[in-house]
Length: 157
Image (cartoon, rainbow, N blue to C red):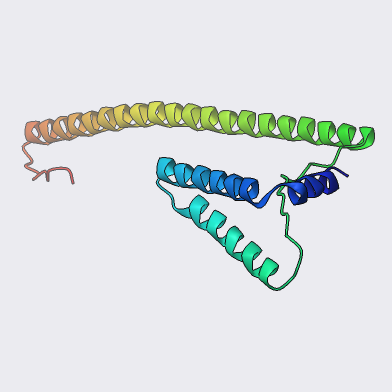
């Protein structure tokens, strides 16, 4: 209905007024192109006028193209409930994943601390055993020397 009224209005206007409107649209496209640094708005407007003039020259009616952004369909109450439920499930799954990742990280840190401590204990135990071996070697060497026996001791590997 509005389109018909608009078309009727356009047809009833004088050619001078129509030309002035077209010039105004072309000027706006030019300014937009200059401001954005992009020739696309001006090219689009020029193409639109070229197509219109060819249609009129062929005796066809004027083409009125109006672009409307696509409208999102309205959700039914059950769809809203499903969407809310999916979002809640996703939120819970994301939280579980974050908690699991955090626990894994903490467990890895705890295991690292435990193994580092265990390594220190084992290194201390190795040093203690090496000291004991040296002590026993000296003790055995001293015992043989007292008995008059001479045994050649080899350094530990």
